[in-house]
Image 1 (cartoon, one colour):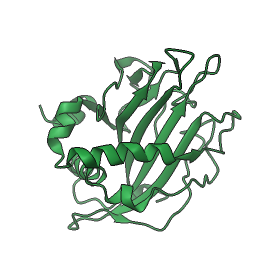
Image 2 (cartoon, rainbow, N blue to C red):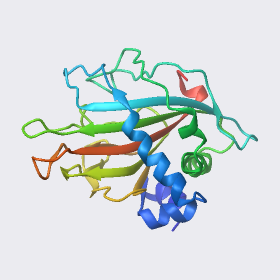
Image 3 (cartoon, rainbow, N blue to C red):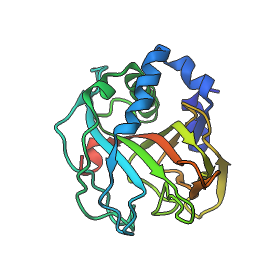
Image 4 (cartoon, one colour):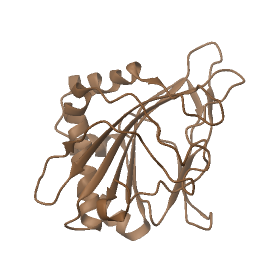
Amino acid sequence: MTALAQVQTRGFARLRPAETAALLTAPGAALHDFAKSWDRLETDGFMADGGRYRRRRLANFLALPGRPVHQRGLHRPHFQASVHNKLNGGVDRWFAPVEDAVVCNPVCTGLLDFGRAVADGLHPETPWFVEMHQFRVEAKPGTPGLPTPEGVHHDGVDVVLIAMLARTNLAGGETLVTDDAGAELARFTLDGMLDLAIMDDHRVMHGVTPVEPADPALPSSRDVLVLTWKRLAAGRG
């Protein structure tokens, strides 16, 4: 069953690293360069819980019917309504922009194309506002990192793609997929480069359990890419 068919049937799909790699035409060097860019993320200074455990960068795009390429937009803040993010919602959050070379990397363009194909399959002929988030969550002994500090949630978009880039010295970090009533539909750990989940944000919620160092003497981090597609007519975008 294709990823689109799985999303249509149950609201989400998971692709293991080999499945994702087969969708991309990127050489190994491109994947290496893409993953290394997470070393250059900047601290998220908008955490309402006061935490400094998250680093990130942000980019946005337009994807219009009949135009196969995602067109990068002018840099702008990220905004989520408080109903979708009770911790950090309701304010414009300015993050450092994703580097141009990262946006142009064939791994990035391939994942954008894959996610758009699913979004277009769910909602044909739709103009999309797309956001790209690079996240690194760091953990220290006695100070867990929180990949989703807002808890299990909807993002307030149409389609969400989450791709693992690296798990370094981590324990925890299970991805949970639930329905609106909180009933668990799936639980898994994205644990390899390009291990991927894609979801219909209207139908399912998602969250990730806290992470902590597997070996307290070594650095510990979780690097993921999050891409979202939101219909322009649906609201702010």
